[in-house]
Length: 282
Image (cartoon, rainbow, N blue to C red; front, side):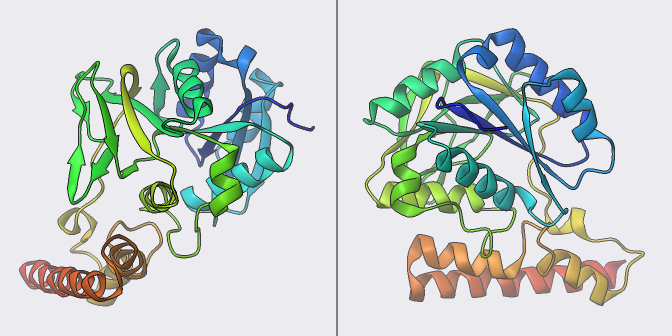
């Protein structure tokens, strides 16, 4: 199936069938299916996600992965697929992010107007209504209030609209250096530095279901595991927000080769010290 020449919503998924279906139901209820093509990138789900989506939403296109795409690889695959078929813009959308009615229309209108080609809504925890930081400016996270518009250096990938021109200039996200965490931050920062301003449009919103902050070392540490197992889980695994290769790559990108390396080295050393303390403490 070829995608039509209209904006494409890219949803990366893995083994969260109920969450994925709830997201797609929200899009259908909002009327977003009528205005956008929807592309689900199913990275090797084993819980029947692909079949369930195909049954309930036959109009949705599904691309498959082998379980090693992670977030960034799934988004990169989806972007290449959509833009190669002439899409004017894409929206990254995590399946646990539920945009309100009219949100995606507003994001696309802004992205295609080119004043701020990278644009995200204000995000809130679905369960509590608490605002969630989904952007950064310098070293500070940005949490816009409802109705507030903020120009930023980069965006989190919960829900982001961007036009074809960004991909044409800088290509897809770098899934090798940023396989899962920081793929969104790195790409949007690279885009803003290439002359594509980014903003959070606080007049529209999306709700995050079951949102939690990235795992910290104490949560990653398992007393039942060996030191080596905990070390690899914390600092080597693509699934970890503390992965060293990702940390060094992002700090160099953000702060330059010298300052970035120094900052990353300091954080890596602090991480090892913390892991040692956790291991000794049991």
